[in-house]
Amino acid sequence: MTPQIKNRKAGTAAVILLAFLLFYFPSMLALISHDSEPKDMTMFNILMATCYTGIFCVNYFLIVPKIFFGKDSKLLFFIINIFLVAILCSLLPLWIEAHGGLPRPRHLQKIPMTYWQHLMGYLRFIIRDGVMMILSIALAYAMRASKAREEMRSRVLELEAERRNTELMSLKAQLNPHFLFNSLNNIYALIAIDPDKAQQSLHELSSMLRFMIYDSEASAVSLSKEMQFISDFTRLMSLRLNPSVKLTCTLPKIKDNTLHIAPLLILTLIENAFKHVAVIDNDGFININITLNTDRLFCMVSNSCRTEHIENLEKGISGVGLINIEKQLRLLYPGEFSLKTENSAGEYRAELTIITSALRQSSGQL
Image 1 (tube, rainbow, N blue to C red):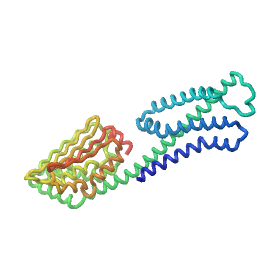
Image 2 (image 1 turned 90 degrees about the vertical axis):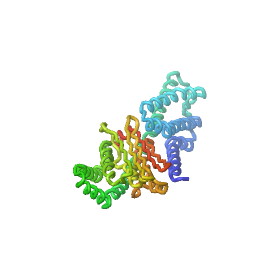
Image 3 (image 1 turned 120 degrees about the vertical axis):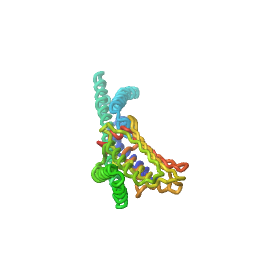
């Protein structure tokens, strides 16, 4: 049994035990300590405790997580619970009346009751027990909300640790002397051939370093900045490519400033393509295609590769591989992404999809 399943079962048992202590324990205590009271009154209290516990458990395990938090439908949550309380407050008195009516203390059992006394008794029942049902619902919501906040806090801490680790790995991969020397040597060679291109490449290198040192410190950056960084990175890395490798890069123009993404998240897929691209029969390729629409952000990176390099592609560059990306995606966009890879006939392909609405929310949640 995995630790997650054990923790889930332990949490369920704790919730059920709490419900018993809150709702059943007073009735059981009265049954033991008040022998003079009629048994039917104690049994009535146990019946109502069962009702409160049922409402609490249904809300805690189903309505609150599935409706209030799952579908984010507060109106439906209130409608369901109002309907539930109204039905119970209407049907329970009828059922109780069919089985002898509301129980009375022993000293009042032989005193006849008027119609208005009967009516006031049922009104007190509806008010008292209706309030208890509402309190049961409120308790279930409060406990679920507290648990959700704790899980969010834990997820943020784990995400921060993972993000720092990914940033460190990426910085080590890119800000090492080998990378800088190669880039500067390529730019130096361009000065004599194409000074304008050399100047542009130097500007791109400067922008990349500024982004990686300063902008990537934030938990989320605008998607437009991330696309600009990928564009600069791709152009700079293309200077080092074998002439036989054909590079195509298609990036979207981002006009929506509300879209944000975790910095350097997509970079690993692109780094792997440049690092492991192979020329087979004087032919090689790297294809980078990123598109954005109202529904999703789609990133496809493919490259020619040899079969023996597949394992290296899976592990990734400097340890920041697909496992790390997927772990970070699960923390950032749970249930709102897909990441898959495939390799066949000398081609390795990685596809990442993120729901657009998750990118719009991320600026305020990461």
